[in-house]
Length: 145
Image (cartoon, rainbow, N blue to C red; front, side):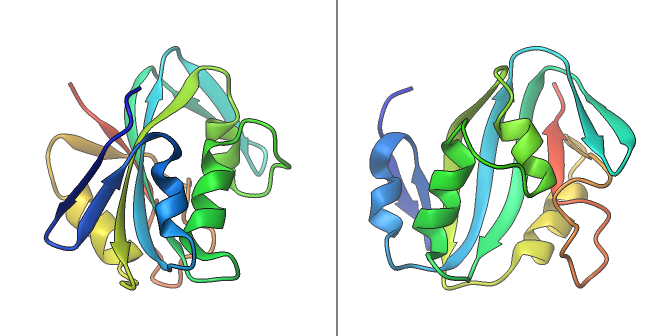
């Protein structure tokens, strides 16, 4: 994966070690993941099957540490499992291939709802939305081929 940064209409797309540029910033982000083989994760005793492909996780980082802390957590393989998305990002078949951020914008649910209306995106129920106050069914989507 090459290092790159692009800025368009307030959205910054980062790959590689460029996460450092988010130090001290807060906002909403899209995490683009490639899953190279079918995997299974557990959500409160329920098994969720994820087929190989490209996925998007929509999140936000407004707590201590902001975007840099949150994004570094996502790209690390070694971490304590806290969120459902951790089971995906920690799996050996999962690789972060891109990150898009919207600085100082808290629009996680709006972005998810917008993406979920696009035919090429299929929501994966019950992942990424455990702290959602808008009762979104997910914040994790598969990009269909």
